[in-house]
Amino acid sequence: MSPAGRCDGEGRCCRSTPRLRHGDPGPRDDAHHGSARRHARQVQRVVRGRHDLEAAVLTRCRHGKPWTAKPLRRATLSEALIDGSPLTDQQIVTQLHFMVQAGVHTTRGLLTHLVERLLLDREIFERLRGERDLVPNFIEESLRHDSPVQRTSRRCTHAVELGGVALAPGDWVEMGIASANRDEAKYADAEAFRLDRPQPRTHLTFGAGSHVCPGATLARLEATVAVEVLLDRVARMDMLDSVHYPPIPGNLGHDPIPARIIAAD
Image (cartoon, rainbow, N blue to C red):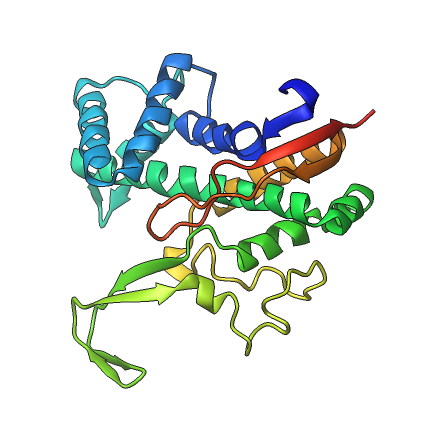
């Protein structure tokens, strides 16, 4: 905490958690976490970051270097079978790259939206401090209202017509997750942030079906722990300046969130 209770709500409360958990689910390894953080930043640069990350992972795969004291992810991917065949090194690289790209900035986006909401809405902050059973609803409504992933793409596997447009096999379709999550036909008062929605998990933020996000449970757990700890330790928090949306295509997040925080007794 800086003097006079000033801090960056995004940097101190949100940025490190997803990087640490996705960088290594096991014991802390500062050198490895530093590498994960560097790769996470490089992914924002898209092409250059991807090449650097793929080269690093391929080197580990080919030389049998473990990721942690218990190389859970690499062992799991190495032992996985698709139609009876193991994954190639390149397929393992692709999956691990996806975990870094999809699991770091998206979870950070969720955490920063939660912090921003608590800063902007004093009533919600005070209500959650007294009614902890509403924390899950708070997280789901944030996922719906401020989806960290605003859009996604899918490739057609067969000819189909959508909205009067003919699509052929191999065509790409861009879907607006943020738009679907505020569909007036699905959600009453869709633009409002509410803790009393009867079915809070009907949003499409984590996808659906075979494409559902494999890290959804982890993201919800991280968010729950983060919010609970913040509510335990903070008596009051106030926004100091307006937030900034970093230019990450398709993602929605903040960097930084200047805030003044008063610790709880």
